[in-house]
Image (cartoon, rainbow, N blue to C red; front, side, top):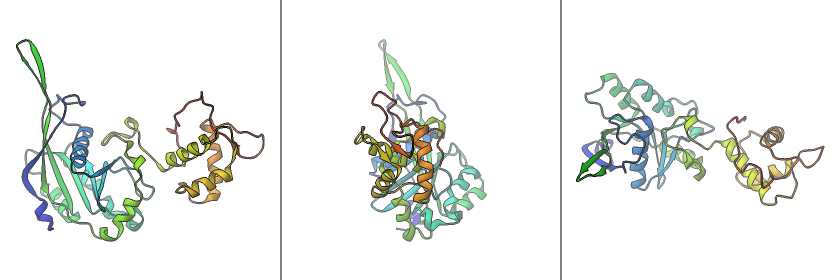
Length: 286
């Protein structure tokens, strides 16, 4: 399929429920734009991964979507600016794309401009093969008749204004990016800032695996060597070497409230049942 076949002046339609945040507002936030993109992708049977944290790539893409071995990345902003094009082009300018992986398609999603943006932005997007998804919104309305109120939910029109191109090297390295995605990465709210949503990091995943291991037998004591053996047998940890993991994990378990069972050595057991269930990792250290 040629990239030009993706461009279309025909709109796709998406309807909300009227209960979403900002449904009655004419303006759209970045979170709302990302939500629209996420919902559109889900209806087309794409698996979406919002706000993904990758060890090999700087920053957090707003949405990564995969389906049948194809990978797309979306950066969502309220308007088309040089900044969002720079964000999207990081995949092309990354020093080691073979490690980070390369998505097949890169998109920018924003509110549909009322006029053509300056030629430099369009030239840059065409130069980097970045697609443009433009969104128009009809806000939700409250309609009253016969003393009763009815909510007419907000609706969106989505246009593919600029076709993306398959990125150079994507056929070889897209699978590298897909292999770094895990189901637990889908917990974030697309488009939300880091302090406003929960997102999975390699550190959190390591600690969650340790928590699962210790809770499997709450009364058993486990040495750090047992913990590392378990991690290596279940996908590995995020530290560079087992040696660095041995030094870094015990202080983190202390900080997170896992009791030591001996006065000497790195022996731990699960948290008490009446202790906090959630693993607090807001002040994570890698």
